[in-house]
Length: 275
Image (cartoon, rainbow, N blue to C red; front, side):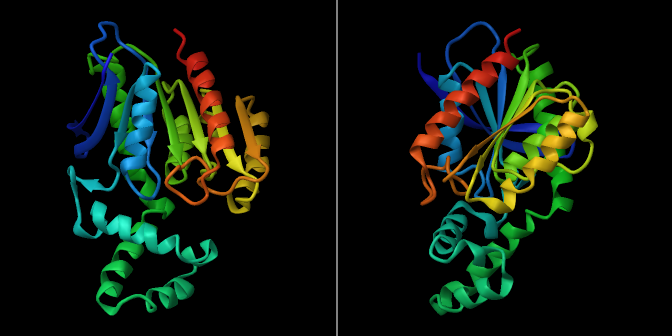
């Protein structure tokens, strides 16, 4: 059966939402939903491919474009500009990504005609990581979860889960804390939530890199909080993995760990959506 994938524009509580949706067609019965939540690079070719992987596994997979305002991307966050920014960042040490002065010094080594646009795109991208910006992202995710659970004919009445990466990983966990109907959240190297942990009602599965200590060092405290509130959380830490080890377009990609994580992900999804 063929996988059908397309961009759609849906109505949310705050306006139009642009989303990449994929499923195997034709299938008559409704299927569970996997919300695939983007990295900082947006719903790029890699995330679209991940969406299609979940569709091939029998789910309806939906990836909202969190960077689109009323369904439209701003110029500084166009796909072309983000590709250029990603290429630049992968040419400098990862420690310089989040150090404004080091990042600026690296920008000044680029051709002069590229510096201004590169600077603007990077400042906008890293601004999206500000926790204060997550409220709008969560609103979009809640809207899509409600749409999938209550309206979409392919998914109506079926469980809704989420799988997020980096920025999206953090949002996947927050969604579990703010949506009592959520069936399960998977976190790939995302920061754990600090609030509303007692409100999490679904199982949470996390994958982390042993070399990604800025993230991984936060997990024991979150694990302890989850235990204290009798919540279900399993953390898988791959000892030699770096950040974004699942992204096969990144130099940090680790095929063995990515393969294991995807197998565990499918097992988890099958368990929490087996209604």
